[in-house]
Image (cartoon, rainbow, N blue to C red; front, side, top):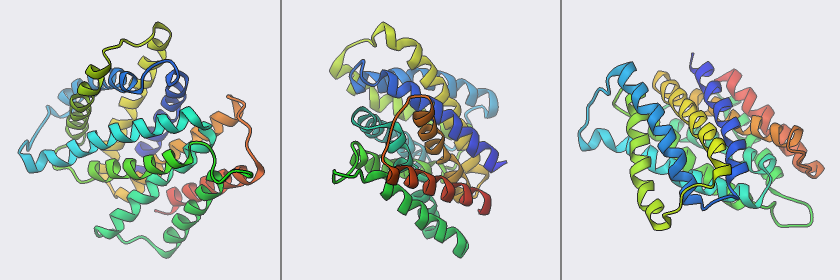
Length: 273
């Protein structure tokens, strides 16, 4: 069930990323973030009320992990969109896929014990991401630096969601509320409504994000976190393929090899863990 839910999150986030890229050049990133969070929160919080009644605990210590996940999600999103604005989704996505491996590494540090084969595949995934990020004739591919930062921040989000004390949907609801509250001041700095052409893509992206966020929260609660994190990171492989097949993005041979290596490593992790 953890693998199925992790993959559900992956495909939801993959399709959401396509809508995000389409709207990223139409408005300020802060407006985009707030609009998506309004939609995502209105989906996740009622679902949490229905599924588990927003059960506690709600003390400061218990709220810290889901709140951290929500804030990290905001920062990761802004970094991801920045990367997509300057680079190709088929390049950016496999690099951000390292979030799963990074989160799995943290899980190991916190006590989980993967096999040597899993450790080898994590290293292979990292090597593949390096190949994708290097564009011949340039130091790095466009957007690679922002994508690496996004991977680290998203890894924090994944780990935090895997260490909450509330039921899974309640954790997702708290995280989304924290995201919305921290995005509000950013939105008020801009005070600009989304462009009409961006409303439908934003609604689709927000809804898909909510589904992915809830699916991962449940997967992480079922555990182990290494499985949930790595399978959810498959969103990047799916998004990269969409970029190549449907958005007609063209890369250098070494970058295609990097995508293939990363996808193979992440798939192997999903099968082994």
